Image 1 (cartoon, one colour):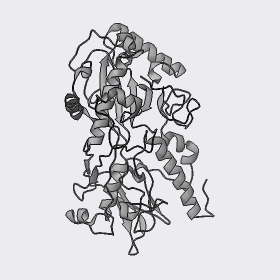
Image 2: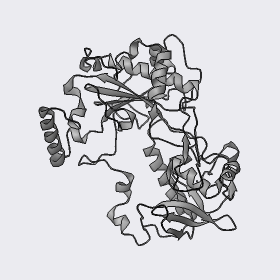
Image 3: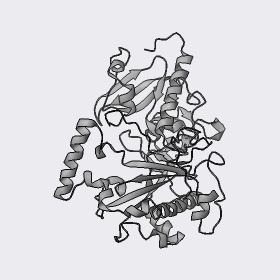
Length: 415
């Protein structure tokens, strides 16, 4: 298909060429015991948790940031449950808001920071009119194409065994994982990823259907990818919440990396326990739809090209599988996409680092415009969504924020 192998897409030098595009084994946060490592496990070690200047409160929800008359953040209110006691914790220097691209706007709005028109709807006093709060929501739009495979290539049999033999295989896999930390149970599920361009170039010409290049290029520059593909040896539907009653199959997930559709996060009410209104506005632009249609067509072509072609079971036909995608028109593929498109779980950009006149919420030092003593530190400050997974960049943002804070308060003890 023309997608090269690249040993490490996280560098600018794959096989001696300046390119992050290509196919590689999925890099992930897995320790030597085959366990997934979160930022909580990596950063909040027993030594860190033992520090006298740190208290971690679990199962609590921030309901409001409090400000004084000078519009300085002086602390936050939080509670453990609706109707329960509300506690206040004060801040001698700053409040750091790291609630994510969905809850950050909710907390800011509940605290009186955001578009004055939105605050007025819920009778919330305005602390600072800031139009960008909750705007510019960006997320990676994904579509999962499912293709039937020969049973021996179906990883799902280890998770949902149906026969005696599969139950025995699962027991063996569990034992291997518990003893050695290896085997099928140590799988990241999506074992292989590829970054490429379908809007133009060689791959684009293979899937454009004679329509030519996609006019708008939203990537970071020439040679940057516009889609990501991930291969998994099992299938799911509706985020895994529903049982997927289909024969053994694999999934190729296609992702629009730099969508131009922008959504919003707003309040449903002034009640902090009521979930915010999220409108992702998926596929609101022709660009996003064109890129996703092409990437779905690419997934079909990959499934019918060696080495995948040999493991696809061409004899299996099932209405929940996508073996017939290749025979569908763009309009028919669009209908399928719109009925099944999902989130990539990468919400970003709802408190953008940008000039105030461009809808920014924070400045280059992550300080919220118009108030004092308040910073936002997470994926919501990204000016644009990154062309890849958001975990690594968010960790980088946090590391940079730590340096900025230490620089603003020299002489402190940070151990």
